[in-house]
Image (cartoon, rainbow, N blue to C red; front, top):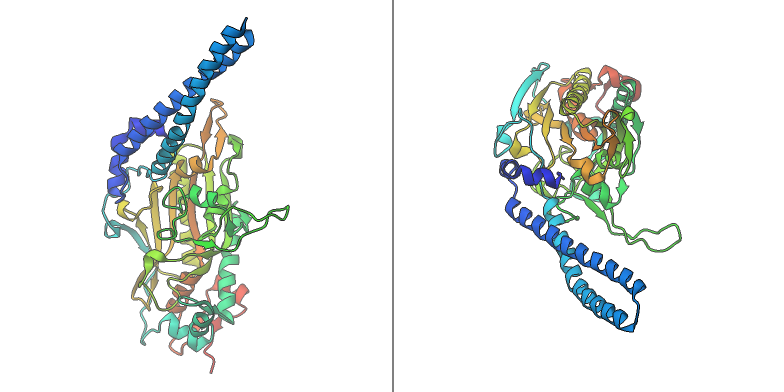
Length: 441
Protein backbone atom coordinates (compact mmCIF):
# COMPACT_ATOMS: atom_id res chain seq x y z
CA UNK A 1 0.00 0.00 0.00
CA UNK A 2 1.26 3.46 -0.88
CA UNK A 3 0.59 6.85 0.68
CA UNK A 4 -2.48 8.39 -0.97
CA UNK A 5 -0.70 11.76 -1.07
CA UNK A 6 2.07 10.13 -3.12
CA UNK A 7 -0.51 8.54 -5.42
CA UNK A 8 -2.25 11.86 -6.05
CA UNK A 9 1.02 13.58 -6.87
CA UNK A 10 2.46 10.73 -8.95
CA UNK A 11 -0.60 9.23 -10.66
CA UNK A 12 1.34 8.75 -13.91
CA UNK A 13 3.97 6.66 -12.10
CA UNK A 14 1.28 4.47 -10.57
CA UNK A 15 -0.42 4.01 -13.93
CA UNK A 16 2.91 2.92 -15.40
CA UNK A 17 3.47 0.44 -12.55
CA UNK A 18 -0.02 -0.98 -13.13
CA UNK A 19 0.73 -1.42 -16.83
CA UNK A 20 4.24 -2.81 -16.33
CA UNK A 21 3.03 -5.38 -13.78
CA UNK A 22 0.06 -6.45 -15.91
CA UNK A 23 -2.49 -5.38 -13.29
CA UNK A 24 -6.05 -4.22 -13.84
CA UNK A 25 -6.39 -1.30 -11.41
CA UNK A 26 -8.05 1.82 -12.83
CA UNK A 27 -6.04 4.63 -11.23
CA UNK A 28 -8.54 7.26 -12.35
CA UNK A 29 -11.30 5.31 -10.62
CA UNK A 30 -9.16 5.26 -7.48
CA UNK A 31 -8.67 9.03 -7.62
CA UNK A 32 -12.42 9.54 -8.06
CA UNK A 33 -13.08 7.24 -5.11
CA UNK A 34 -10.59 9.27 -3.10
CA UNK A 35 -12.43 12.49 -3.99
CA UNK A 36 -15.80 10.97 -3.05
CA UNK A 37 -14.40 9.66 0.24
CA UNK A 38 -12.89 13.02 1.17
CA UNK A 39 -15.98 14.96 0.13
CA UNK A 40 -18.42 12.79 2.06
CA UNK A 41 -16.10 12.58 5.05
CA UNK A 42 -15.79 16.37 5.05
CA UNK A 43 -19.55 16.84 4.85
CA UNK A 44 -20.06 14.35 7.68
CA UNK A 45 -17.45 16.09 9.84
CA UNK A 46 -19.14 19.43 9.18
CA UNK A 47 -22.49 18.03 10.31
CA UNK A 48 -20.91 16.53 13.42
CA UNK A 49 -19.37 19.92 14.16
CA UNK A 50 -22.79 21.57 13.75
CA UNK A 51 -24.26 18.96 16.07
CA UNK A 52 -21.63 19.76 18.72
CA UNK A 53 -22.37 23.48 18.33
CA UNK A 54 -26.07 22.79 18.88
CA UNK A 55 -25.25 20.89 22.06
CA UNK A 56 -23.44 23.98 23.33
CA UNK A 57 -26.37 26.20 22.30
CA UNK A 58 -28.81 23.91 24.08
CA UNK A 59 -26.87 24.27 27.32
CA UNK A 60 -26.96 28.08 27.06
CA UNK A 61 -30.57 28.37 25.83
CA UNK A 62 -32.42 31.00 27.84
CA UNK A 63 -36.00 29.84 27.30
CA UNK A 64 -38.25 27.15 25.83
CA UNK A 65 -38.45 28.86 22.45
CA UNK A 66 -34.67 28.81 22.03
CA UNK A 67 -34.52 25.18 23.14
CA UNK A 68 -37.28 24.25 20.71
CA UNK A 69 -35.39 25.97 17.89
CA UNK A 70 -32.20 24.09 18.75
CA UNK A 71 -34.09 20.78 18.97
CA UNK A 72 -35.60 21.35 15.54
CA UNK A 73 -32.21 22.10 14.01
CA UNK A 74 -30.74 19.09 15.79
CA UNK A 75 -33.45 16.83 14.41
CA UNK A 76 -32.71 18.02 10.88
CA UNK A 77 -28.94 17.51 11.31
CA UNK A 78 -29.50 14.04 12.78
CA UNK A 79 -31.62 13.14 9.76
CA UNK A 80 -28.94 14.37 7.38
CA UNK A 81 -26.25 12.43 9.26
CA UNK A 82 -28.33 9.25 9.08
CA UNK A 83 -28.50 9.63 5.31
CA UNK A 84 -24.88 10.67 4.84
CA UNK A 85 -23.15 8.26 7.22
CA UNK A 86 -23.80 5.03 5.24
CA UNK A 87 -22.77 6.81 2.03
CA UNK A 88 -19.49 7.89 3.66
CA UNK A 89 -18.84 4.37 4.93
CA UNK A 90 -19.59 2.89 1.52
CA UNK A 91 -17.28 5.43 -0.14
CA UNK A 92 -14.47 4.53 2.26
CA UNK A 93 -15.04 0.82 1.62
CA UNK A 94 -14.78 1.36 -2.14
CA UNK A 95 -11.66 3.48 -1.67
CA UNK A 96 -10.01 0.91 0.61
CA UNK A 97 -10.72 -1.90 -1.86
CA UNK A 98 -9.02 0.03 -4.66
CA UNK A 99 -6.12 1.11 -2.45
CA UNK A 100 -5.41 -2.55 -1.66
CA UNK A 101 -4.71 -3.08 -5.37
CA UNK A 102 -2.22 -0.22 -5.77
CA UNK A 103 1.17 -1.58 -6.83
CA UNK A 104 4.51 -0.35 -5.70
CA UNK A 105 6.67 1.54 -8.17
CA UNK A 106 9.80 -0.28 -9.26
CA UNK A 107 13.46 0.56 -8.98
CA UNK A 108 15.36 2.22 -11.81
CA UNK A 109 17.37 -0.95 -12.37
CA UNK A 110 14.28 -3.15 -12.72
CA UNK A 111 13.70 -4.26 -16.28
CA UNK A 112 10.37 -3.53 -17.97
CA UNK A 113 8.87 -6.63 -19.59
CA UNK A 114 5.42 -8.18 -19.82
CA UNK A 115 6.39 -11.73 -18.78
CA UNK A 116 9.10 -13.69 -17.01
CA UNK A 117 10.81 -13.95 -20.41
CA UNK A 118 12.13 -10.49 -19.62
CA UNK A 119 14.05 -11.68 -16.56
CA UNK A 120 17.78 -11.23 -17.07
CA UNK A 121 20.49 -13.60 -15.97
CA UNK A 122 23.13 -11.72 -13.99
CA UNK A 123 25.54 -14.60 -13.61
CA UNK A 124 26.07 -18.34 -13.41
CA UNK A 125 28.11 -19.96 -10.69
CA UNK A 126 29.46 -23.49 -10.44
CA UNK A 127 30.01 -26.05 -13.16
CA UNK A 128 27.05 -28.06 -14.40
CA UNK A 129 27.97 -31.72 -13.76
CA UNK A 130 28.91 -33.81 -16.77
CA UNK A 131 27.89 -37.41 -16.15
CA UNK A 132 29.38 -40.43 -17.91
CA UNK A 133 26.04 -42.16 -17.38
CA UNK A 134 22.39 -41.24 -17.91
CA UNK A 135 21.51 -39.15 -14.86
CA UNK A 136 18.45 -40.12 -12.87
CA UNK A 137 15.68 -37.83 -11.73
CA UNK A 138 15.07 -37.14 -8.07
CA UNK A 139 11.99 -39.36 -8.36
CA UNK A 140 14.08 -42.32 -9.49
CA UNK A 141 16.78 -41.61 -6.93
CA UNK A 142 14.27 -41.15 -4.14
CA UNK A 143 12.83 -44.59 -4.83
CA UNK A 144 16.22 -46.31 -5.20
CA UNK A 145 17.51 -44.78 -1.98
CA UNK A 146 14.19 -45.33 -0.18
CA UNK A 147 14.10 -41.71 0.97
CA UNK A 148 11.05 -40.42 -0.94
CA UNK A 149 7.62 -42.05 -1.12
CA UNK A 150 5.25 -40.34 -3.54
CA UNK A 151 2.70 -43.14 -3.82
CA UNK A 152 1.88 -43.26 -0.12
CA UNK A 153 2.10 -39.47 0.02
CA UNK A 154 -0.67 -39.26 -2.57
CA UNK A 155 -2.69 -41.93 -0.77
CA UNK A 156 -2.55 -40.03 2.53
CA UNK A 157 -2.40 -36.38 1.45
CA UNK A 158 -3.73 -36.34 -2.10
CA UNK A 159 -2.22 -34.77 -5.21
CA UNK A 160 1.30 -33.40 -4.56
CA UNK A 161 1.57 -35.30 -1.27
CA UNK A 162 4.85 -36.99 -0.37
CA UNK A 163 6.84 -38.62 2.43
CA UNK A 164 10.51 -37.94 3.10
CA UNK A 165 12.02 -40.83 5.02
CA UNK A 166 15.34 -42.25 6.22
CA UNK A 167 18.18 -40.00 5.03
CA UNK A 168 15.67 -37.91 3.09
CA UNK A 169 14.15 -36.71 6.35
CA UNK A 170 17.60 -36.09 7.83
CA UNK A 171 18.62 -34.21 4.68
CA UNK A 172 15.58 -31.92 4.93
CA UNK A 173 16.03 -31.21 8.64
CA UNK A 174 19.77 -30.77 8.12
CA UNK A 175 19.16 -28.11 5.46
CA UNK A 176 16.97 -26.16 7.85
CA UNK A 177 19.40 -26.42 10.77
CA UNK A 178 22.33 -25.52 8.54
CA UNK A 179 20.59 -22.39 7.22
CA UNK A 180 19.49 -21.28 10.69
CA UNK A 181 23.00 -21.77 12.08
CA UNK A 182 24.62 -19.75 9.29
CA UNK A 183 22.11 -16.91 9.62
CA UNK A 184 22.39 -16.84 13.40
CA UNK A 185 26.16 -16.52 13.03
CA UNK A 186 25.52 -13.52 10.71
CA UNK A 187 23.47 -11.68 13.32
CA UNK A 188 19.95 -12.83 12.40
CA UNK A 189 17.58 -13.58 15.27
CA UNK A 190 16.35 -17.18 14.89
CA UNK A 191 12.60 -17.60 15.22
CA UNK A 192 9.93 -20.27 14.84
CA UNK A 193 6.91 -18.09 14.06
CA UNK A 194 3.23 -19.09 13.92
CA UNK A 195 2.09 -20.87 10.76
CA UNK A 196 -1.59 -20.54 11.71
CA UNK A 197 -2.38 -16.84 11.46
CA UNK A 198 -5.13 -14.25 11.26
CA UNK A 199 -5.89 -12.37 8.08
CA UNK A 200 -3.89 -9.21 8.83
CA UNK A 201 -0.37 -10.70 8.44
CA UNK A 202 -1.33 -12.07 5.02
CA UNK A 203 -3.02 -8.89 3.84
CA UNK A 204 -0.20 -6.82 5.32
CA UNK A 205 2.54 -8.75 3.55
CA UNK A 206 0.63 -8.79 0.24
CA UNK A 207 -0.42 -12.44 0.08
CA UNK A 208 -4.04 -11.39 -0.44
CA UNK A 209 -4.54 -9.91 -3.90
CA UNK A 210 -7.27 -7.64 -2.56
CA UNK A 211 -8.56 -6.30 0.73
CA UNK A 212 -9.82 -9.68 1.88
CA UNK A 213 -9.10 -13.34 1.21
CA UNK A 214 -10.33 -14.67 -2.12
CA UNK A 215 -10.05 -18.44 -2.33
CA UNK A 216 -10.30 -18.35 -6.13
CA UNK A 217 -7.03 -16.46 -6.62
CA UNK A 218 -5.07 -16.36 -3.34
CA UNK A 219 -2.78 -19.38 -3.04
CA UNK A 220 -3.45 -19.62 0.68
CA UNK A 221 -5.17 -22.36 2.65
CA UNK A 222 -8.01 -21.18 4.87
CA UNK A 223 -8.75 -23.23 7.99
CA UNK A 224 -12.41 -24.20 8.08
CA UNK A 225 -12.58 -25.26 11.72
CA UNK A 226 -13.64 -22.45 14.06
CA UNK A 227 -11.31 -21.54 16.90
CA UNK A 228 -12.04 -20.85 20.55
CA UNK A 229 -11.30 -17.62 22.40
CA UNK A 230 -9.77 -17.58 25.90
CA UNK A 231 -13.24 -17.33 27.46
CA UNK A 232 -14.42 -20.42 25.59
CA UNK A 233 -16.54 -18.55 23.05
CA UNK A 234 -16.32 -19.37 19.36
CA UNK A 235 -13.89 -17.08 17.55
CA UNK A 236 -15.25 -15.17 14.58
CA UNK A 237 -11.78 -14.45 13.19
CA UNK A 238 -10.70 -16.31 10.09
CA UNK A 239 -7.48 -18.32 10.30
CA UNK A 240 -5.06 -19.28 7.54
CA UNK A 241 -1.92 -21.35 6.97
CA UNK A 242 1.11 -19.36 5.83
CA UNK A 243 3.01 -20.12 2.64
CA UNK A 244 6.25 -18.81 4.14
CA UNK A 245 7.47 -17.42 7.47
CA UNK A 246 7.56 -13.94 5.93
CA UNK A 247 4.03 -12.77 6.94
CA UNK A 248 4.43 -13.89 10.54
CA UNK A 249 7.88 -12.34 10.85
CA UNK A 250 6.79 -9.02 9.32
CA UNK A 251 3.68 -8.86 11.52
CA UNK A 252 5.79 -9.42 14.66
CA UNK A 253 6.12 -5.63 15.02
CA UNK A 254 2.68 -4.84 13.57
CA UNK A 255 1.21 -1.66 15.05
CA UNK A 256 4.47 -0.76 16.82
CA UNK A 257 6.65 2.35 16.75
CA UNK A 258 10.33 1.41 16.98
CA UNK A 259 13.30 3.59 17.73
CA UNK A 260 15.82 4.12 14.95
CA UNK A 261 18.54 2.66 17.16
CA UNK A 262 16.75 -0.72 16.96
CA UNK A 263 17.21 -0.86 13.19
CA UNK A 264 18.07 -2.84 11.26
CA UNK A 265 16.16 -5.79 12.68
CA UNK A 266 17.02 -9.10 11.04
CA UNK A 267 15.10 -12.32 11.56
CA UNK A 268 15.62 -15.88 10.35
CA UNK A 269 12.36 -17.79 10.53
CA UNK A 270 11.89 -21.52 10.16
CA UNK A 271 8.42 -22.72 9.22
CA UNK A 272 6.39 -25.37 7.53
CA UNK A 273 4.90 -23.74 4.44
CA UNK A 274 1.53 -24.42 2.83
CA UNK A 275 0.57 -23.34 -0.70
CA UNK A 276 -2.57 -24.25 -2.59
CA UNK A 277 -0.81 -23.73 -5.97
CA UNK A 278 -4.10 -22.59 -7.56
CA UNK A 279 -2.29 -20.73 -10.32
CA UNK A 280 -0.03 -23.68 -11.08
CA UNK A 281 -2.64 -26.21 -12.13
CA UNK A 282 -1.08 -28.71 -14.53
CA UNK A 283 2.50 -27.52 -13.93
CA UNK A 284 5.27 -29.76 -12.58
CA UNK A 285 2.84 -32.51 -11.63
CA UNK A 286 5.53 -35.13 -10.96
CA UNK A 287 7.93 -35.29 -8.06
CA UNK A 288 8.39 -32.64 -5.38
CA UNK A 289 9.28 -29.56 -7.42
CA UNK A 290 5.85 -28.01 -6.85
CA UNK A 291 4.14 -29.24 -3.68
CA UNK A 292 1.50 -28.09 -1.22
CA UNK A 293 3.76 -28.21 1.84
CA UNK A 294 7.46 -27.97 2.52
CA UNK A 295 9.92 -26.42 4.97
CA UNK A 296 11.79 -23.19 4.55
CA UNK A 297 14.09 -20.78 6.34
CA UNK A 298 13.20 -17.20 5.45
CA UNK A 299 15.20 -14.02 6.01
CA UNK A 300 13.36 -10.82 6.88
CA UNK A 301 14.84 -7.41 7.60
CA UNK A 302 13.37 -4.11 8.79
CA UNK A 303 15.52 -1.10 7.92
CA UNK A 304 15.20 2.67 8.06
CA UNK A 305 13.43 4.53 5.26
CA UNK A 306 16.44 4.75 2.98
CA UNK A 307 16.36 3.12 -0.46
CA UNK A 308 20.12 2.60 -0.62
CA UNK A 309 20.11 0.91 2.77
CA UNK A 310 17.21 -1.33 1.76
CA UNK A 311 18.91 -2.29 -1.52
CA UNK A 312 22.17 -2.99 0.31
CA UNK A 313 20.31 -5.22 2.77
CA UNK A 314 18.69 -7.07 -0.11
CA UNK A 315 22.08 -7.64 -1.73
CA UNK A 316 23.57 -8.91 1.53
CA UNK A 317 20.66 -11.29 2.09
CA UNK A 318 20.84 -12.86 -1.35
CA UNK A 319 24.63 -13.10 -1.01
CA UNK A 320 24.10 -15.39 1.98
CA UNK A 321 21.76 -17.59 -0.08
CA UNK A 322 24.39 -17.73 -2.81
CA UNK A 323 26.97 -18.80 -0.27
CA UNK A 324 24.65 -21.56 0.96
CA UNK A 325 24.20 -22.82 -2.60
CA UNK A 326 27.97 -22.87 -3.14
CA UNK A 327 28.60 -24.68 0.13
CA UNK A 328 26.03 -27.28 -0.92
CA UNK A 329 27.86 -27.71 -4.22
CA UNK A 330 24.91 -26.57 -6.32
CA UNK A 331 25.41 -24.86 -9.68
CA UNK A 332 23.06 -21.89 -9.80
CA UNK A 333 22.27 -18.67 -11.54
CA UNK A 334 21.04 -15.28 -10.35
CA UNK A 335 18.18 -13.55 -12.15
CA UNK A 336 17.10 -9.93 -12.02
CA UNK A 337 13.30 -10.05 -12.11
CA UNK A 338 11.39 -7.97 -14.65
CA UNK A 339 8.13 -6.14 -13.95
CA UNK A 340 5.90 -8.75 -15.59
CA UNK A 341 7.12 -11.39 -13.13
CA UNK A 342 6.81 -9.22 -10.02
CA UNK A 343 3.94 -9.15 -7.56
CA UNK A 344 2.17 -5.85 -6.91
CA UNK A 345 4.15 -4.83 -3.83
CA UNK A 346 7.70 -5.49 -5.00
CA UNK A 347 10.06 -2.61 -5.69
CA UNK A 348 13.05 -4.74 -6.70
CA UNK A 349 13.50 -8.51 -6.92
CA UNK A 350 16.01 -11.26 -7.69
CA UNK A 351 15.70 -15.04 -7.94
CA UNK A 352 18.21 -17.80 -7.45
CA UNK A 353 17.82 -20.92 -9.57
CA UNK A 354 19.75 -24.13 -8.99
CA UNK A 355 20.62 -26.48 -11.85
CA UNK A 356 18.44 -29.60 -11.80
CA UNK A 357 19.73 -32.33 -14.14
CA UNK A 358 16.47 -34.27 -14.02
CA UNK A 359 14.62 -31.26 -15.42
CA UNK A 360 17.59 -30.35 -17.63
CA UNK A 361 17.15 -26.73 -16.60
CA UNK A 362 17.54 -24.30 -13.74
CA UNK A 363 14.73 -24.31 -11.18
CA UNK A 364 13.86 -21.54 -8.74
CA UNK A 365 15.16 -22.17 -5.23
CA UNK A 366 14.74 -18.72 -3.72
CA UNK A 367 13.65 -15.14 -4.17
CA UNK A 368 14.86 -11.85 -2.67
CA UNK A 369 12.41 -8.94 -2.60
CA UNK A 370 12.59 -5.32 -1.54
CA UNK A 371 9.15 -3.83 -0.75
CA UNK A 372 10.23 -0.45 0.69
CA UNK A 373 7.27 0.74 2.83
CA UNK A 374 4.53 -1.01 0.81
CA UNK A 375 4.15 -3.75 3.45
CA UNK A 376 4.90 -1.66 6.53
CA UNK A 377 2.07 0.76 5.72
CA UNK A 378 -0.35 -2.16 5.69
CA UNK A 379 1.11 -3.59 8.89
CA UNK A 380 1.58 -0.14 10.47
CA UNK A 381 5.22 -0.59 11.50
CA UNK A 382 7.00 2.70 12.10
CA UNK A 383 10.12 4.09 13.74
CA UNK A 384 11.12 7.49 15.10
CA UNK A 385 13.84 9.22 13.10
CA UNK A 386 16.50 10.22 15.63
CA UNK A 387 17.37 13.45 13.80
CA UNK A 388 13.95 14.78 12.78
CA UNK A 389 11.89 13.02 15.49
CA UNK A 390 9.45 12.23 12.69
CA UNK A 391 7.61 8.91 12.61
CA UNK A 392 8.36 7.00 9.42
CA UNK A 393 7.39 3.60 8.08
CA UNK A 394 10.23 1.09 8.06
CA UNK A 395 11.36 -0.49 4.80
CA UNK A 396 10.91 -4.26 4.61
CA UNK A 397 13.10 -6.77 2.75
CA UNK A 398 12.83 -10.56 2.56
CA UNK A 399 14.68 -13.47 1.03
CA UNK A 400 14.59 -17.25 0.92
CA UNK A 401 17.60 -18.71 2.68
CA UNK A 402 16.83 -22.35 1.84
CA UNK A 403 13.67 -24.27 1.04
CA UNK A 404 13.50 -28.01 1.59
CA UNK A 405 11.89 -29.65 -1.43
CA UNK A 406 13.62 -27.97 -4.36
CA UNK A 407 16.99 -27.86 -2.64
CA UNK A 408 16.71 -31.60 -2.01
CA UNK A 409 15.98 -32.12 -5.72
CA UNK A 410 19.11 -30.19 -6.64
CA UNK A 411 21.28 -32.05 -4.12
CA UNK A 412 20.10 -35.50 -5.20
CA UNK A 413 20.38 -34.84 -8.92
CA UNK A 414 23.69 -32.95 -8.91
CA UNK A 415 25.50 -35.23 -6.46
CA UNK A 416 24.29 -38.57 -7.80
CA UNK A 417 26.78 -41.29 -8.68
CA UNK A 418 26.73 -43.99 -11.33
CA UNK A 419 25.69 -46.70 -8.85
CA UNK A 420 22.67 -44.65 -7.78
CA UNK A 421 24.22 -43.38 -4.55
CA UNK A 422 24.25 -39.68 -3.68
CA UNK A 423 27.11 -37.83 -2.03
CA UNK A 424 26.00 -35.75 0.94
CA UNK A 425 27.36 -32.18 0.84
CA UNK A 426 30.06 -31.81 3.47
CA UNK A 427 28.18 -29.10 5.41
CA UNK A 428 25.20 -31.45 5.83
CA UNK A 429 27.11 -34.55 6.93
CA UNK A 430 26.91 -33.71 10.65
CA UNK A 431 23.11 -33.69 10.32
CA UNK A 432 22.70 -36.70 8.00
CA UNK A 433 25.36 -38.72 9.80
CA UNK A 434 27.07 -40.13 6.72
CA UNK A 435 29.04 -39.12 3.64
CA UNK A 436 26.73 -40.70 1.09
CA UNK A 437 23.27 -42.19 0.76
CA UNK A 438 23.31 -45.70 -0.70
CA UNK A 439 20.64 -47.53 -2.69
CA UNK A 440 18.53 -49.98 -0.70
CA UNK A 441 17.69 -53.35 -2.15
